[in-house]
Length: 101
Image (tube, rainbow, N blue to C red; front, side, top):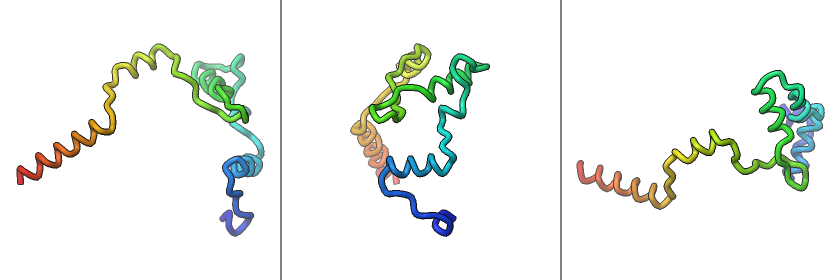
């Protein structure tokens, strides 16, 4: 539909983001949530804080370091492994299944 009714979006990421924002009426995430001091629930407060969260030099959102104790605890319970471990597992499973045929 866009091809028929409007010009193609710009090639650059920043220009494309600006064009999409302008096309959507200029309303960003921060304007579609409650202010943190007037959030009626914990969920809305989380949304408000996320909307104004860490930003880069050009005012784009950037994830910050994990700080919530519940999240850190849950993440510490997850057993991590690297790509080479996964490759070894996949190779061993493939070699084991071909010898069973």
